[in-house]
Image (cartoon, rainbow over all chains, first blue to last red; front, side, top):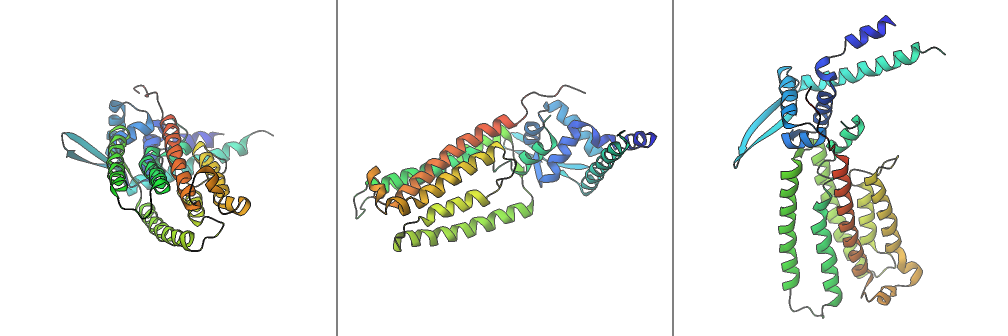
Length: 107
Length: 203
């Protein structure tokens, strides 16, 4: 069982947080998304979304590009190659973790 | 927060699920068919279809802006965009062939109708099992359209005249137009309902 706890501890907490995992999942399926689309798809407030995006940018998992269109600022967000790899690794870890838990279940 | 699979489905098909985008084209198809049904031949005045096309373009631009301002924009992957444009080009060519077949060969099957069925079945998001709300609408539409396309086989080539429609091609395109409007409105409602409404609280 201790192995399972080690696996949980080994998860990347930057990605594992539900809101950030949702952002990463969205970005992994598209070329780029703007701030409003991410807000709509995740249901996060703009403040919350900004905080999560900043953390992901700090971790170099995503990148963003700000442009001024008319009077508005438009933010286009993209996943980086490092982010894509980290997300794939995270899902693999979760799958392994799930399989191990299933195995350790008493019959 | 929505389930991961649903979030993935929504983001992958984000602009395709903007149902109202299909409404102007559906309305245009329906009204053009209606006009073709009542106009006196040979046609001398093309003002109505010209106004209709301009109106369709204007309405499309307005709906596009509405989606951009309300739901934001997602740029699909290059592979996805490429396959979309290839599919559109093939469908355009097949549409011309189907139109020519329907007009010249006078067969008891509407090829235009069947082309729209194949579009409904092959266009993304494709019908998948288990059915989601979007797929269910598409499946019902496809079945209805197959039936409408082959009705002359059962009821004769001129059965549309009973409904006051001059020809099968006009009846089928009117039906397709109405279906596009109906699907557009339903998909829009489903799309809005699929998005998370409650905003997450601060960490």
